Image 1 (cartoon, helix red, strand yellow):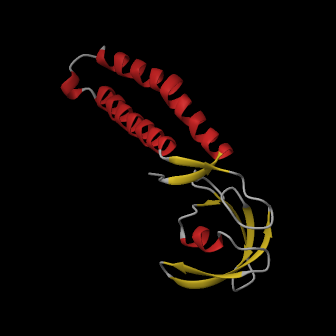
Image 2 (spheres, rainbow, N blue to C red):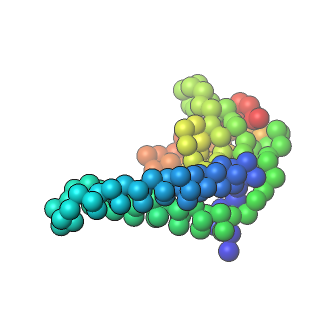
Length: 148
């Protein structure tokens, strides 16, 4: 079962994060736990508990990334004439304000998920198209200004 669609570039970004977490980051956390153990009584050792908590968060993120990559379908980068996964799109809202976003399941600053209200409304549309965005706070119209 495919959980999400990613471009090769987006999948590579997730693979890079996974390599960092499984390599240097995991090594740092293990070293922090070892150092904290040397402080003595573990029942009252804040550093130990903090390091173990960090390890739990790290391992959860690693599991999430592995699952995302295993369940992903790699798709071609979208062409410039139609909004697709990997497209960078400028849209104007009803007030004329321009919003520039990348349609990406990876997330991060300046991105919208293809399953989000804006992302799903934009998929398949072309420059000049007005789309209805069904957001939790109400519906609004976005007009596609450019696609790259």
